[in-house]
Structure formats: structure tokens, C-alpha cells
Figure: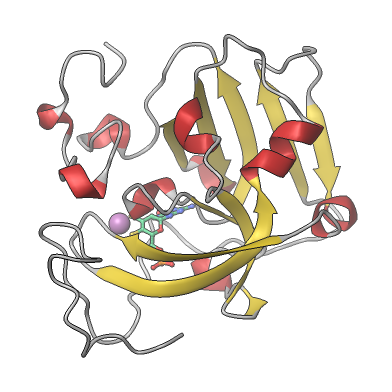
Length: 206
Ligand SMILES: Nc1nc2c(c(=O)[nH]1)N[C@H]1C(S)=C(S)[C@@H](COP(=O)(O)O)O[C@H]1N2
Ligand SMILES: [Mo]
């Protein structure tokens, strides 16, 4: 990762209110889960096109085709980590293998220990939404989401679920972990959608 802390990013690559700290902060709620490849599974569930619920074993998931996404990362607590090179399985690849029902307009991303984040299907289906296995050419570190982490780079980073284990297609929107605790349902950093009190009608479930 390139140290860009000396680069004047204000007004260009940095969304309003964000700053580039020294180093790369790590934050999450709860402890780092251990990875057991023999029992690890990735599920695609909920409103799928066929009604089928999909399970990917670790050998299967880790063999899926990978793509690279270079993206900045914006935490709602205002630090940004610039120029991360993530590599993994695109949401588009997963949607081909496990297609959503046409009426599924929302997605819940589920992690170990019940952490979750909801996003709109339009955000999920973007070509930079990824299930990353590598960061900057190496397997993701345990505390940053090993073995697989969701990356939704155009939204605040709490939507980039570490230790992700399941995708749930939703017909009706539902709030995830931080969205239930006062954070914005959509979370676009360029519009500073930080808190739920900023939500306009129609931007969140009732
Ligand atoms: N499973 C899980 N994923 C999570 C979190 C968490 O608490 N649990 N925290 C989120 C928040 S608020 C941020 S800012 C980023 C931090 O990612 P980093 O530790 O790689 O910097 O992870 C996100 N993903
Ligand atoms: Mo965050």
C-alpha cells in the first residue's frame, strides 16, 4: 500500500469531513473469530431466483474466479484508508452462481457472531462490490476480515463486513447492526450520510 498521507487529497479523493491518518486503524465490534476451513461455509440465502439456498465450502469458495478492485475506504468516525488493492470474488460472480429473485431489492451481509449490514441491491450489484480474500497481494489479516471480507467501497466502511459468511437477498429492507443503532441506512460518504436522523423518506425501512 502506497503512503499517500502527504498527497493533497482534500476536495478530490477525500469525501467531506474525512482525513487520512498515519497508519491503518483497525476497528470492529467484538473479537476476531478463528477460521476453521473444514466447517466454514458461505451461504447465499433468502429471496433467490429459484428458492434454492446456496452453500459454498471453503475449497469451493476459494477456487472461484477473482478480480481486483483498487479503492479507498471511509470510516464514519472520519478516517479514510486510501488506495487499498482488494482481490476476491465479485458480487457479480456470486449473483451469476446464486441469482436473486427479481423482487429482491435489498441485501443483508452477515458475519460471524451476528454482525450484519444492509445495502441496496443496486449497491450490491455494482462492479466494485467484492468478497475479498486478499489485500495488497496477501491474504487478508485475521483482524481485517480473514478469510473473506465484503468490500463495498462506495459506502461507509461499516458496510464492508469482515469475516462475512452469508448474503441474504431481501424483498423488504431491514436494518443491520449499525443501521439499528443510529447510523444511516444508505451511508454514501460523498453525501455525508452518517446518521439515521439524516434519512429522507424512502431511504430506510419504517
Ligand atoms: N464483522 C465486522 N465487520 C466490520 C466491523 C465489525 O465490527 N464487525 N466494523 C466495521 C467498521 S465500523 C469499519 S470502519 C471497518 C474497519 O475495517 P478495518 O479494521 O479493516 O480498518 O470494518 C467494518 N466491518
Ligand atoms: Mo467504521
